[in-house]
Amino acid sequence: MRHLLFDLDRTLWDFDGNAYRTYQAMFDAFGLASLCHVDFETFHERYRVINDALWDAYRNGTVTKEMVAIRRFSLTLADFGCDANAPDIIRLSRKLSDYYVVEGTRQTGLMPGTLPLLESLDMQRDRFSLAVITNGFSEAQYPKMKTAGIDKYFDHFFLSEDIGYMKPDRRFFEAVLRRLHAQPDECLVVGDDYKVDIAGAMAVGIPQVWYNYGSVSIPAGSQQPSFTINHLAQLQSVLNSL
Ligand SMILES: [Mg+2]
Image (cartoon, rainbow, N blue to C red; front, side):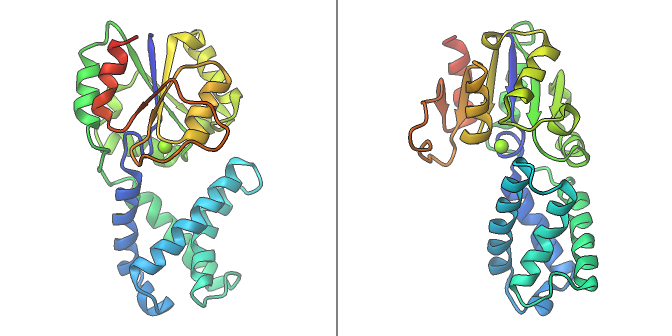
């Protein structure tokens, strides 16, 4: 095993915790409580559902990145009585989106055990190279890693926007293998999302470690990952077993 390929969001970077803090600040800064007549928790819950659906659509290629960025807010506002197509709501949605990208990338929360893991892998440079494999927007992903101070641990950054395909598309993983001049069995993918990280790696024959921190079940009829962990501290024993 020469190359460890890490997903970023919800694997190393605490996407949900960081997003939650950003939305809370945004909700207050833009006075959304009085505009939507709703409390933050209700607004945020609705936003999450809409955002997840838009991301699924983006991965499937049915909406563009720009549409995801604006509509995740305009559709949420629409659920609380605003007109999603009104110019002022579209303008507000664009401002919210810009705010989220700028403020969200300033958050530094990491998943439990991220820094000790990266520190320890850094001591094993003779054994492993480290790469990030991520689907996020590149204007967000690079600053996030830098602000959180984890970019220095990685030798390679593979972003879907640079590669032209998104996980779980096999062409994403094939491009990564080509760029690393590596065979599938020389790599190990570590990721939290079964459908995106694990199934994608499986399809091209790369061994996988599923970081299943929420202890969810695998989708019905799917194959077991090569390894499953529920805390990053367990990764070292997987590496020792190889
Ligand atoms: Mg993830």
